[in-house]
Amino acid sequence: MNQLSDRINSLSPSATLAMSQKSAELKAQGIDVINLSVGEPDFDTPDHVKEAAKKAIDENYSRYSPVPGYPALRNAIVDKLKRENGLTYTAAQISCANGAKQSVCNTILVLVNPGDEVIVPAPYWVSYPEMVKLAEGVPVIVYAGIEQDFKMTPAQLEASITPKTKALILCSPSNPTGSVYSREELKALADVLTAHPQIIVIADEIYEHINYMGQHQSMAQFPGMQERTVIVNGVSKAYAMTGWRIGFIAAPEWIVKACNKLQGQYTSGPCSVSQKAAEAAYTGTQEPVAEMRKAFERRRNLIVKLAQEIPGMEVNVPQGAFYLFPKCSAFFGKSADGFAVNNSDDLALYLLSKAHVACVGGASFGAPECIRMSYATGDENIVEAIRRIKEALAALK
Image 1 (tube, rainbow, N blue to C red):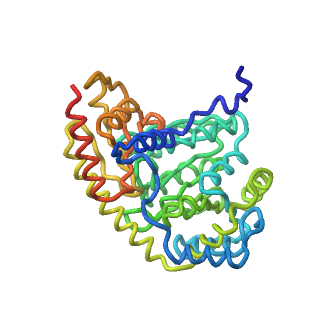
Image 2: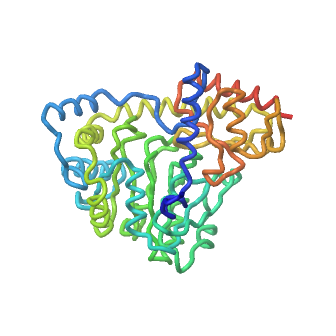
Image 3: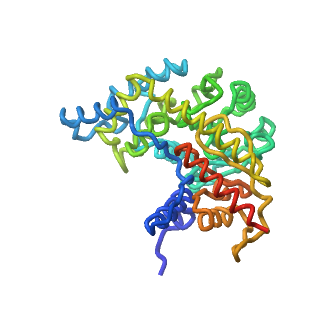
């Protein structure tokens, strides 16, 4: 007897976590699986950040923090936004959460009413439409293919707006595509939004520092946009701190207050020790961030070069994050060893079983003709993974 709520029954499980689980199971059986499915830096947290956490434990940062986070961390974020982004906020406009994922979800839950529409450009991160559904909103999917570098155009944005549109979720640099909106491209979208003042922009900037185009650009920089933009960011990707679970929003105070009210009822403030570690990440040396970005750029160049040599795989050059999102529909309808490939999910399972490489099918990212590969792994792994993939794809007839 299924007595679960309609709310939970309407959600899809996370495809990225599911694929990660499958690859872990094969590894446990002693199979040499190369995991390109997980969106996680393979670097260790910088030493000065770990030292700050140890110090926090010794200084007994072991009690509840304020719901939006310690003032010292929020002030460090204010300084970061001024220093790196040229944006002026106060500590009252910052709310910290258990990862940027919770920050996005908090924002959607406090803004969206049943029936409200939220524009979600596709390919999208798997959780965006699910979070909108959780809030009983309607995700309006706007598809941008590889031929436009997976970026939504102003005309597409304009065409998707209705009187019910409440928000737009914009992720740049993007998961899953690695696409980055330039200043000019963001300005063109902002110009469209100017005529629709009711729309809030949820700007997911978690990959801000993994950007190969130079200076990161934020939607909040344009006249009139800071008052209606919720910047979402955190320490996970830039500082290799995925497990520390610290994200934040920088937003108009009325939205921050609402998120604090919501969070106060279901998780309260994030981990006290992690907050002190995050404070050190923002206030200390940024050299590890620059080093990691250099390594990711080298790997990007490597995986693009190798993937472009695979017949039938269509590859663009991502400008940020650590994902390649090739178009693989040329392989659909083919089979090998009794394994039929009819879509990208089939292809991902085929590559896992035949090549022992874990990728994620594109359907759950809103792009069923693509697969996502994370290159947050060593150069040798990338070379070997693409060699295996090339061999496995060549066997499909």
